[in-house]
Image (cartoon, protein in one colour):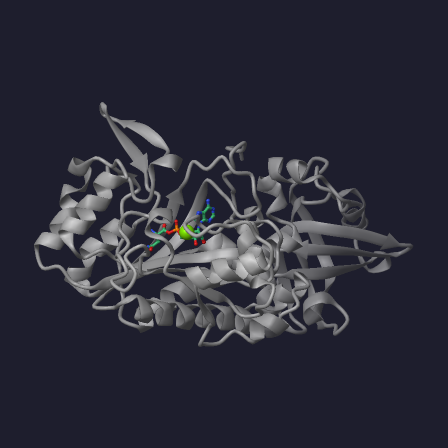
Length: 433
Ligand code: 4AD
Ligand code: MG
């Protein structure tokens, strides 16, 4: 017997006219009289196997008749070029074996309710739209690392169990840490700030947690955030880094995930226009604009999602809104010397209804002002002693931002709800699977 190469669908072009073996899962089967078909998904692609009854031992044909969707199978046969087949190849089956028979598969090619699909997320992952979305996510994550690596940033892994509140007291997951309260990290920012004097340019990338009781399409309780922090960068430079960063990751997704974006039926016209500079609008001007459009927003209140949507009506590119009121934002932001009611900060709003994808700021580098803000927010001073040390031992201008991965990937893929862009979403009412 000749050696049959075990290969993968993505490598079939290297095996034209060879006999190969593919391991994968049954997507669909069809039979028309004496010809039958199986589409096998092996995780690298889909390939169709063609069964000709007269050329096969009887038992191979009966396996095809009995095999169920999502059964694990070994498909053996001759690789042929077939321009009409998905992927451009077909396999003329010589042998077929069921390795793990599947029970009746709960997800059928009909419309299921989203709760049903989320209950079956462990299986839903195998569906084509979910595969496409999560591949784009993986490409975006890789491009995040490449962008910062190419620019000489050092990756800093920040703790998930923390003693100091990172953002605000309202949305904390608290746990008992040997008798003292600990919180799941809302952000890695305070720790990348500490690493700045060691490495100048740093970033962290990991899961962050917010006990937000909001059931919107933009909120998860566990989401992934990338947070760069740069020494000697002010707020203006921070925004320039953000627009370069966004341009880089969008362009990477467009070039390397064109197949996935096609599967997702994403109209990429507006994504292709993404390049610096992005328009900039001050919070104060944004409020005036909203009021002119009939909104009842008053100066001082943070922008809510509906406000962001109104602001984005006239924008195809992402929009920076900068210099929000201090009181509407976190304690660590630097007071704006030109208008002390505001902070040197920005949000970046994505077009097409995706809202805030980045929050960033210059950090308060004056130790006294920082302490005053911590006390004003009612935060415990002892928990921030180490953070205040950073202003005592060589303070410096520095800025950074946080980009939410799921919101960004939802925008790039054009999916409505961010829960589809994380493999296992954690939502207010959902801890399984
Ligand atoms: O604006 P946020 O709260 O900023 C920070 O956490 C800063 N410490 C970042 C920094 O300056 N280093 O969150 C940043 C981003 C948001 O713009 C949004 O994209 C995402 O994180 N985000 C969420 N994504 C999904 N679900 C949630 N509940 C989110 N909350 C924030
Ligand atoms: Mg924010």
